[in-house]
Image 1 (cartoon, one colour):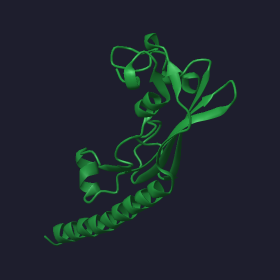
Image 2 (cartoon, rainbow, N blue to C red):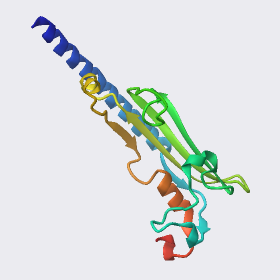
Image 3 (cartoon, rainbow, N blue to C red):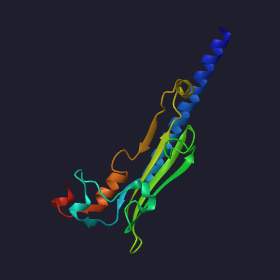
Image 4 (spheres, one colour):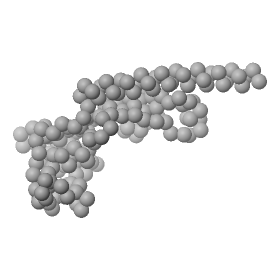
Length: 172
């Protein structure tokens, strides 16, 4: 009985510490996001309708080609910078690390003149959940938090830069 009480008290103490860590990291994500997060479009590129699929997505985008994901005319730069933790879910290259906080920065650059056409910057936190020890032991997923909530990411960035020249207002 005494061991069970000690175990439960230890888990409660761990929960309190990780909850404070989660709150601290979420506040840091918000702070960094206010400073430079979001979508920035510097120039749009009129693009022929045949370069889009039926869902309005670019046919010539292939993320597996990394910097050449947009073909020979554009550089596609996708960078994750880890401020805490790392090697977990954001890049999938290693074991789960909790908590993790990182910045994702996506840039599209025209090769002809090396001009930055647009960029997307997001901040995220993974893990540091209340009850993480119990959740980890049971295989339950940890939570994540990020910002900005809307208007960033690869698809939105590409949609805002590469405008369908065959449709009114650039919409499909």
